Length: 112
Length: 117
Image 1 (cartoon, chains in turn brown, blue):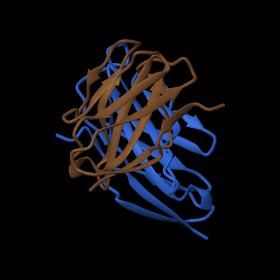
Image 2 (tube, rainbow over the protein chains, first blue to last red):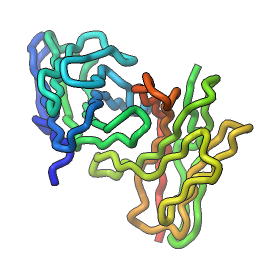
Image 3 (cartoon, rainbow over the protein chains, first blue to last red):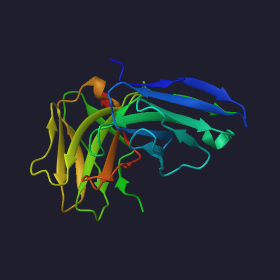
Image 4 (tube, each protein chain N blue to C red):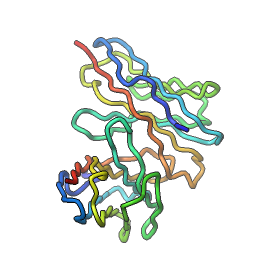
C-alpha cells in the first residue's frame, strides 16, 4: 500500500552540488509530476510526464531536469544547486489528467 | 493573472461548527476541473473533493461539500461539523481542459484553517 514514495525525505546541499530526487509509484499511473512548495506560494509545477519516455516543462522548469525511463519512476535532477532551489519538493501521480493526483510525502531540500 | 485565488490567508472556527473556505478561479475554457487538497502540519497532501465544470450537482464527500457557482467562478469548500483534526492548510486547484491535454494543475496559495476546542 505504498502509493507514491519519494527518496530522500531530507537533504542539505552546498551551492553547485548536484543531486537526484527519486519518485516511485506503484499504482500503474500514466501521469507523474514534480512540484515545489515555497512559503506563501502554494505548489508550482516544475516538470511532468504523461507516460514512460515522455517529459514536459511546467511553470518553473529552469535549473531542473527530469527523466522517466520506467513508468513507475520519475526522477528530478538538480545539476548545479542554487540557494533559490531551497524548497519542499512533491511528486504526484494520476491515471489521467482529470483524475485526482496522489502525492508523496515530500522532500525537504536546503541549499547552503 | 492569478488563475486561482484564495482570499483568506487564515480562518478560525469553533469545533462542531461549519466553515466555508473561499476559492475563485479564472478560465475561459468551458471544460475544467476543480480540486481541494488538505495539507496537515505533517506536510502530506490529501485529496478531498473534485468538481467538474459540467457536473450538474455540487460534489459532496462525507463532511466536505463544494459550493460550485459557475457564473461567479467560485468553488468554495464547506466543511460541516468541524473537528480538531481539520486544522490544516487547504489548497484549491484547477485543471483546464479536462478532455485531454490537460496535465497541469494550478494551485492557489492556500488557507490555513484552525479549529478551536
